[in-house]
Image 1: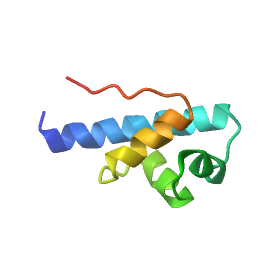
Image 2: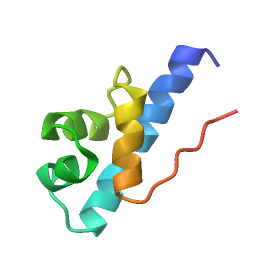
Image 3: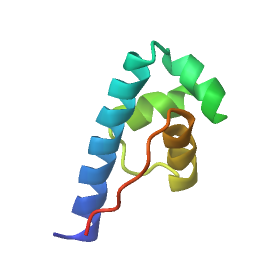
Length: 73
């Protein structure tokens, strides 16, 4: 699998998990953005699986809701 394809798949999966966890915690996208130190638009784009987002900010969002990244082999 090409790196770009793997990146798109990883971001789509990560976005789905972020949305699922955020809703389980009863947080809005704005709430999560405040916790993670980013803009709510970033959270929205992450949940939609946009693959060109800054990885450091993605990690901030994951950490804010207690998720750990798993890098595919």
